[in-house]
Length: 364
Image (cartoon, rainbow, N blue to C red; front, side, top):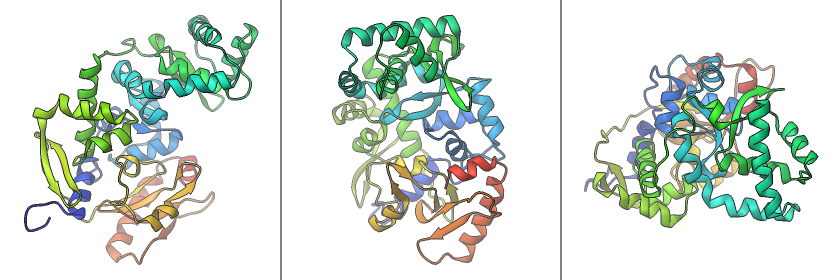
């Protein structure tokens, strides 16, 4: 922190490390961690499990899988930025529509390009609901077969956009695994409490802002928009909805905000091996706090894929991967690592060993 009380970059990073629960892994359920973060990117499920591992003590892959497929306390759904996330089951009813709405028009535009008319789209949504109600969990291939029999075009990317739209509209979500992939289920069947609570638009925006700041402060409305995928104007509305709960914090990068209830914490010497797509890599608009432009080019291998990263006090100090059959992870440092960091990496390695080898490999 600068002498005048303004937060410098190191202080911002350390506070965000604490907000993300990376500084002191605790004994918490997968649902508790997901609830704190609001969501965990899960386009690769095993990477999402490792993201939860980074924030808990003694967590195993089996516990994460049980929370999703047996307890159903967390659910796999398209949410923030229109991408797959693990989210709390009770938040499905307000979080999914809020975060997917900005992408509905694009999904429908793509469907028209694939030859699916507006009438066929509406009919497909009804057919998906009826099929899942009658037959239970179904793979995307099975859904495509049912729709095709009723004259709905599913070729090309049409079925992908139809499935996304059915989930965005709260008809379906991902359920149990079938043939190694999550199947689709009817939301009302899969979530014991139905779709979870719903919120009025302004209330939902305010709730999203509070949830976001609990796990990302200090931050700005622009950060909320970048993380969630909502419009910048809606992020500003979200800030205004909870302005009495906010505290402005001066930083070297301009004004940021925290919640009044936030306990200031700036831990030091925190080393974590986070997986691909970790929340700490995607949680804010400005990524220069985590890595330089040259380092980001090493983290982002192209095609939207972010490599796993070694973090030291919130700063990327290298990437890592665990090659198939290797006894140890392959750590590629950005600079010379001190003995303390190397020792911490060894401890992290032992924790990761408790997850299946498939999780190690996808994180490469």
